[in-house]
Amino acid sequence: MKTSALFTPHQIGSISITNRVLMAPMTRSRTAQPGDIPTDLMADYYAQRAGAGLIISEATQISAQGKGYSFTPGIYTKQQISGWQKVTRKVHAAQGKIFSQLWHVGRMSHAVFHEDDLPVAPSAIAPDAQVWIVGEDGEGRMLDCPTPRELEYAEIKSIVKNYQQAAKNAMLAGFDGVEIHGANGYLIDQFLRRSSNHRDDKFGGSIDNRMRFAIDVVETVCTAIGADKVGIRLAPFITQRGMQDDEITDTILAVAKKLNKLGVAYIHLSEADWEEAPVVPEKFRHDLRAAFSGTIIVAGNYTAESGANLIEQGLADAVAFGRKFIANPDLPARFANNWPLDDISDNDTLFGGNEKGYTDYTNYMAANV
Ligand SMILES: Cc1cc2nc3c(=O)[nH]c(=O)nc-3n(C[C@H](O)[C@H](O)[C@H](O)COP(=O)(O)O)c2cc1C
Image 1: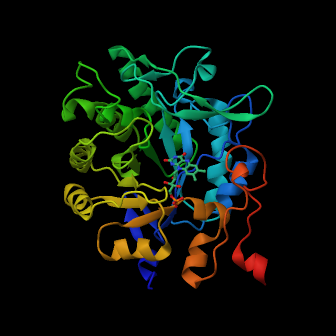
Image 2: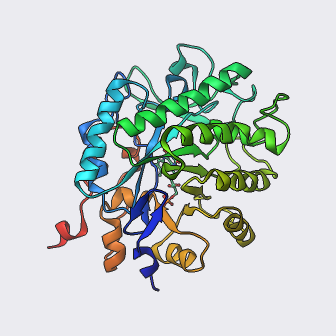
């Protein structure tokens, strides 16, 4: 099948991309401790994948409160910003482009990250989910998320400011733009859904109220760095982590209309990626296209063929690949030349650890000439 649609240039807001094979954001939990600081090894990992039309960084906490997993990076201290500078310099030196994914986990967290205080959320409802935590013995375990504390009205404003500062920090760190993480059951998603948001102030209740936090964040980030450098990730079809809400597609379409007015660069759909997940309804794709005139990125179990097919139908502009980019640093070249793909060799190396399973995957040409 033809995959040439993946290899035409495209404009995403202020940046031009030379191919539409993007690297999806992926947490790999390899920061330096203490301080959640990006390392030289992370710079090598991202630079190896600079052939992507655009790299979206792993989720990166905007504040200490926004953290929910061990060893994930932050972007709110000087040391973290200089760590990221090493990453962006190396990616740019390899002709790549990279956005920072800005993250606040909300209730997807644990008291161990907050000096025994509870994680925060729109409402005090436990997520029926677990987070990955490395104990003092050095062993990683999945631990249940506790019932979070409901955010006070005034605190919500200060979190919005944290997003703005993090976006400015991302610019200082040399990123080409930011992706606001509004997907996968994290804080912004928690505000969007009736299952996790039972507030009775202006951040809860109607669709307009539930989307207010997302829009406030996007607006303030756009004011700080320019809408043409801002994208957002949304996940209309996840149901796990206590996120089931049959009004979510209407809510997300309402968000998309508002984002269109704000002129943000892209919407990135995090689609269902597990085996036998529901297929995204064709109608939703058309509705999203009608609501939003910027770039639409899709991700979740795509192949080169299925991605190119969606671009040809006009229902997406670019495709982000996750797991395939882990095992194939030269993924766009493999797609372009029809070279075989490697598989992830060891799932235990996905989160945490060293260069094993991280920077030791090879380019096809290097391994086969
Ligand atoms: C190891 C791993 C870490 C991930 N971390 C993130 C993350 O930090 N932020 C995010 O939005 N999605 C994250 N995801 C989801 C991916 O971005 C992507 O949507 C998913 O892997 C489906 O794409 P794929 O089938 O091409 O792998 C992660 C996925 C994997 C496999």
